[in-house]
Image (cartoon, rainbow, N blue to C red; front, side, top):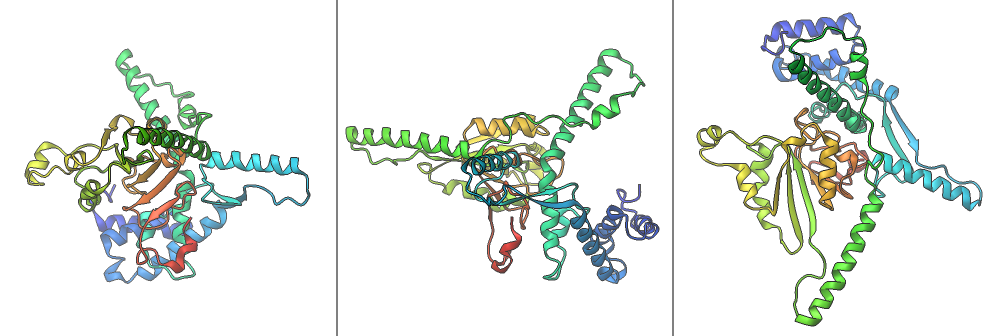
Length: 386
């Protein structure tokens, strides 16, 4: 009520009151108050509440980690020589690995689960200065969102479908019915994940290795016949997925890199789920520069996938069907509601990479690599990256 119109004094008072009344146990209210002060109220009067607010962030996140985080074993350590037991345990581990979208690059013996996300959003936690003893809390905020990202995407998808269905019914009936008897419970239910998802990393790798062997054989035969010096392996299909292929800071920094890729080595696919910039905005504000078009002019394939916004399952199938081998994600945890939430957890590609936007660990065991440097990600903190 007060926050959106930027009535800062009233908003801060009500947030502060909710924190006091709950004895600082109302986690979301407390951490939202911190967020409000950090962005609008300068940490209280001239920053005088900074240390107190940071203590709230630390305490709340640590308690949430103790309550909602668990680490489970992918398989037991065998204590006997029974080969059948070893095989069944390995099979069970592979099933869990597939279900969680975990590749063999990650989590040899365990996997991480959260029952709910932390109150502090990863992008908020990113900028908070924490001591070495508390820096693991930054990983906790990312871990919790990564663990629940796909599940939340299905809940949001169900809500969207329910809303569309309700609109259709209203148009057909021309009168809204007021009977919500079972509708509320149904809306809270979660769409079932198809049996073939997440995709199997090992199956995709085996498939690509076999296809490349066939390609190499055919190219070697062609060389003998024509003395051609072309590459002996098929171009690697690399995909970039984001909702911000328009006038965004990430694109300002990176739009030009696509023209430097060697087409004999990589085949570049852009998967854009966001809107293009309006023509008037391009002409007046951007002085005629269409950043989206600049990318389109320098990549092999630009896929405008606005119809898949809110449909991470459909988007995963689209990308997987194109046999993308490396998928690079550009949104991180920004642009909630626009980003392709839950997509990477479905493992549409065998190798998945986080690049730009979110300069911290993804917290996900289905992200294999992060593009970073030693300043953003000091080597001594490597253990904090999933």
